[in-house]
Length: 288
Image (cartoon, rainbow, N blue to C red; front, side, top):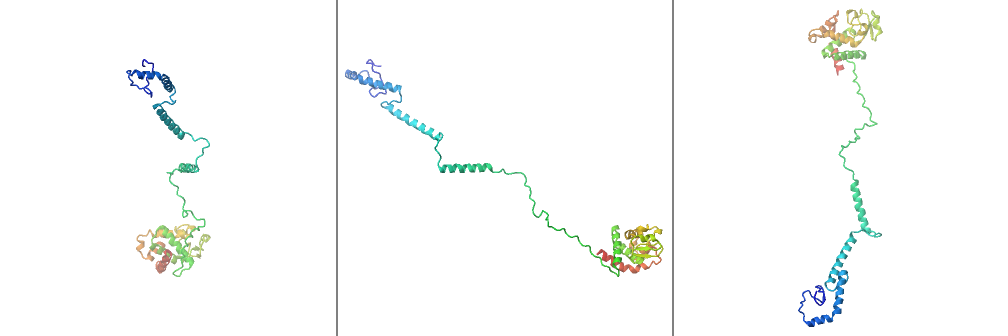
């Protein structure tokens, strides 16, 4: 502060911060003469200090303009990030884009998670049994026709002899000997005995008179071959004969008539040989 009572304002337009006190008196007089103007300027500056938004000369106005611009920028920024005012609906294009994004997002969340469990194989049509499928017919047994001058009854009895021998595991030579022996003893018919009335109680195809001899091989119960019931059974009678044949040493290498006689002990030992050819033909037909 100078002695003339005037405040130094470095920002004022009428004063200078580097004004010297050596100002000529004429200038001081002029300043004194303009005291009302200086007081008005002082008041204006004082008001500016109290109200920074009031208009000030010079650079104060420039600062106010810059501040206003900054405030407008902040207000614009808040307006953009703020909530949309009520009633301000989005445009149709924006609404469509939002709906499309929401649908894609929902679809991606709704995708089923890939299962790691092993898939259950579905039954193929070929694996399912057809309701209309017919069972396969059973194979028809081959019909064995009579050969070597035999009839069907005789051929059936020969078949029973061959089947019983195969169950025992007897070779083909033993089957031929057994059939040839039955041809000589009973002509391949299952005989009962008139001397042994019990034998007639069982299935038979003829009746003989040779003591108590019965069955296909004319075996006698009194000689220990078996009971009457057993000997009237073609299967039992055959196995009894073959069991006795297998006890003869080297029976397979013996002539047929010798092998048969060794078992039967017949009064006519050479009679069996005449049936060897026919017995081979019968066995051949049965075995196929």
